[in-house]
Length: 234
Image 1 (cartoon, rainbow, N blue to C red):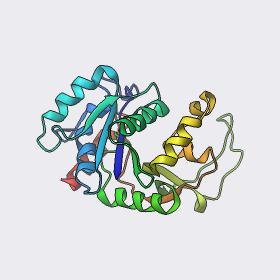
Image 2: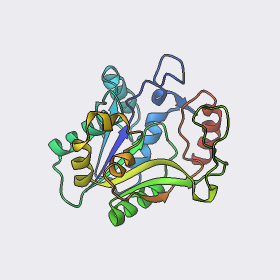
Image 3: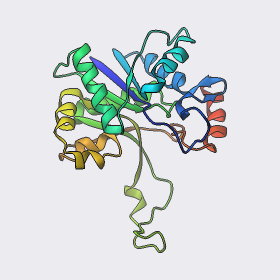
Image 4: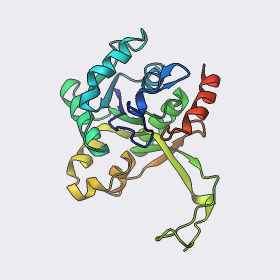
């Protein structure tokens, strides 16, 4: 079985406004609806859970119920205080409601990446089954410098070895849960993405298909670009 955990537990304070960014509309459709549609429509996911702030659970259900293709097709649960908390809540939800088999797969994805495609999801699952864990990524097009104080360049890594990490990030379910539950509080505080859970225990994380269009909508300036991308996805 393949399960998907869409993480929408943040409040989106960098975006401003009254609603968390996952509920903002892009070309008339809420971001959360666009993302959910991608997973419902990819043809391989057996169950999807959406992790949102507790106070937005009812609102999320109301939004999804407004679209026939998402109505009643996603479980909406409370997210955690941070990313690891949401991941734990999603894992425990699937364990309790579906059970977990040895060869089950868990896909994790940022809700505010609404332009993920079926090809990216399939690529991520394929890589996770081969290596145990996988993350979508694309080669870095920028020169990246290291500066501990933000004033002067200390070093410049070889750009040919640098990649921009995206989601989906996918793992063999049982292994991921065991590692996640074993992390200390201090280790969990250092988790910036799901792949860090695997890497903290020395596990391999493969690179899977990403795309420059698989943007993360974070700031108000991202909305115009998202509107343009939505035209090509319609």
